[in-house]
Image (cartoon, rainbow, N blue to C red; front, side, top):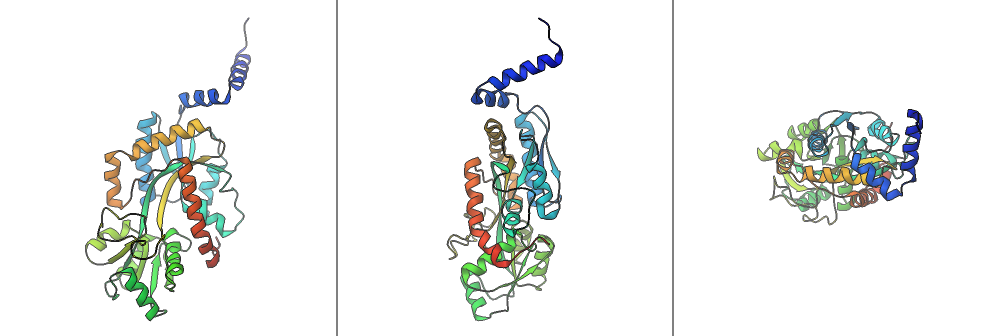
Length: 329
């Protein structure tokens, strides 16, 4: 019996649909990917996260045997890029550079988002973290976090801290510090990390709550004094600088985390294929060497672990966001 092409396709589709779910997923994984994969970066080009995700994309292209490209889709505080992925086909070909802004900050602000951060994404995994570094201008008479807290309590209203902007991870890290230390450093937002660091270098602002990358050369040159790092472990670049937990604020964590998320409903076999490729790339000595100048760490978590990490960060930061009364206007 002969079939028209459309009839043949219908029979193939029917046969595939008749397969048990596990067999279907295996079949999908065996053919995935067969076209270009897009990673949507909800930020403008440039900056540590953009640099790191492009390293990842290049490595995943090799691992998967298909091009993996990064497309920058900034706007509306990361909402435009995140929504593009949330509404994409759940087939693994459109992924989100998942960070705190679209998954934690924007939902906590309370605005009517076009996506649901908890329901519209499936976590692929975390691939890197960039810690925030707490530093001061050399004129500030403190050499440790304990001394900074004591000085802030002794001179209320005197100290200001610079961040990369209202609602950013460093800003929330600064307010988390205020909350946990029982002090009140005044926030001075800047349009990005670079101008924030320049403000502290010039002495306009006393304290820097900014990620480590733009501060590295200035700390090494003695133009900034590093007091603590916001990650759970010490930086390879500054092993002598304690973590905030070691410095006395137990449980404090302030770092920019970077992961991949897919649209909800993406087959688990595809998620697994993407995760394994991501993990292999981040384990590469060449990639880890490339991360070092950025002060970044190859922090790899699987789908379930990444999801738990995001929920833990949400639990810590949402009360801070609510207290600040942030809006996306």
